Amino acid sequence: MSTSRRPEPTLIASNRKARHDYTILKTYEAGIVLAGTEVKSLRAGRVSLVDAFAQERDGEIMLYGLHIAEYAYGTWTNHAPRRTRKLLLRRVEIARILAQIREGGFTLVPLSMYFSGGWAKVELAVAKGRRSYDKRQVLAARDADREIARELGRRLKGRSRPR
Image 1 (cartoon, one colour):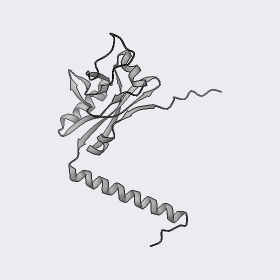
Image 2 (tube, rainbow, N blue to C red):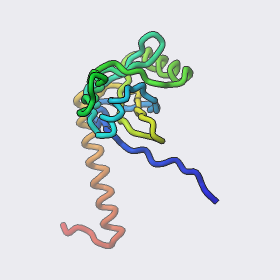
Image 3 (tube, rainbow, N blue to C red):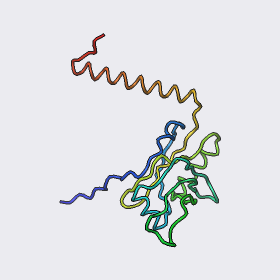
Image 4 (cartoon, one colour):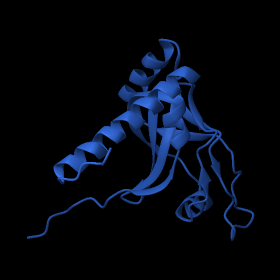
């Protein structure tokens, strides 16, 4: 009896700064239109999501600022590193995303890139920018939660920290 299981997604790159700078409201998985040398560079892990963002253009969602380094062994067929790339989403998802963005104050940010079943995918988030004091509050809450979990773990093991 064979069970067909999907292989685990292979992470290529993640945008950790986006999770710090934005409050993530909803995430979407999108395919991405790539050239052959871009795929080879992705497999080598030569990609940066730092300045990337997505916007609507002619009823489609496009990814701007994504840097995929030129393929080292590419010839005249090599790609431009920061070219605009089309994201592949269903019409219903595009309509839903555009409705959220047009509300105001929201943006589309790529959180990560990965291979899933041999296809390159982008995790796209509808996000709202954080102010600097919001960032400090989030960091303080995260540190407090971590300390609570650490102390709870110590108590469960029967070791309490000497005071």
